View 1 (cartoon, rainbow, N blue to C red):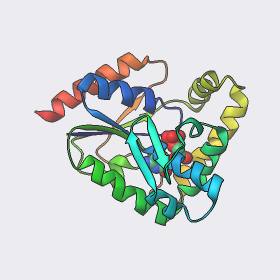
View 2 (view 1 turned 135 degrees about the vertical axis):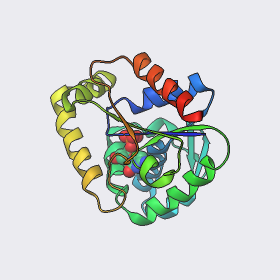
View 3 (view 1 turned 120 degrees about the vertical axis):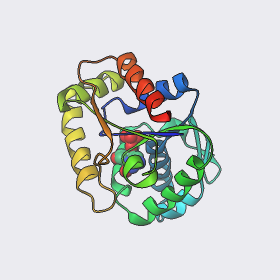
View 4 (view 1 turned 45 degrees about the vertical axis):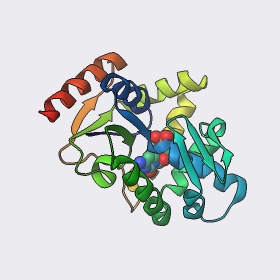
Length: 204
Ligand code: DC
């Protein structure tokens, strides 16, 4: 079974997807981390992102190598975030990562998070969730994580949201049959419990 969790930055996707996978006993796929790992490699080496994507090795949900180099420690930096959002508009890169993601999801039970998992990567998934939260709450959460100013995060986030939703290829949007959950003012545990129930229903 595949459960997809899409939505904008700061909606709580990573915490929710990770905890949902744990609760269901499913594997967890963080596709944003794949874009980020390629971004670290293109910042370091240059060259076409799709080429770097072919040298990407997903060891597990917590470890990423590109050209044999462990880039895990660098994928959450602001520079990696910015570069990931930029290269995510490249259709050749999206095609290369799509192939990798579909191959991974073809076997076993997964919770997969990203921006286009329910719409493009796994449109046949049994359960599709689209997580949202108010822009202010999303920025406040990220600022707490990063220990920075919420206003700066909000400005940055608005830019990334626009880039992600306005790009021509696989823009950020909810699948028509996705369940939309607003996480504003809700705890991770509450949201996870709801998704676990939905997954149980979808299985029947
Ligand atoms: O979820 P995240 O912040 O780790 O994602 C990093 C970037 O990658 C973000 O700008 C959106 C992009 N991305 C994408 O285009 N498609 C995905 N399936 C996952 C992430």
